[in-house]
Image (tube, rainbow, N blue to C red; front, side, top):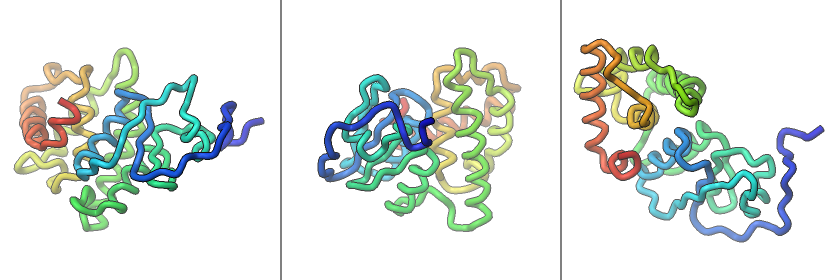
Length: 201
């Protein structure tokens, strides 16, 4: 029986000494694109992305992440795995600009939204026929004055919503006009951000 942190792969050499930061993941997946957007929002030019071939994973990655959990972030010699944990790590490690609200109640609301997106919406986007119409209606209801999600300044939930709304399978034409108009206005606001434009568009 293989333990959770074990894998059928094994590294043949020790990891090289690292300088900077490396994000490993499967290219084009919602979780990977979300983390790439967060890195862009944090303006971290030293961060690099490496696509992972599951049949021939990098030995350096296996040396510190033998379970091959993806996405994975290696910050110098510190491995961090799981998209939600990586996002929280980046926001704490690089607090400016902040991507979480300061008030605990607002942070809890953002975490609940991220739980829905990471646990339900993002997996749906990986299927051949995603069904996120009901969730799009819920998202439209969360857009407040000045096209701000939950009425808050830009946060990790906005980053996840940007990935969702810019996904090729996301269609707004099946939504009722008020909801579609609200989401279109929100998308226009998201696209004014250089990080969104350079990462997702």
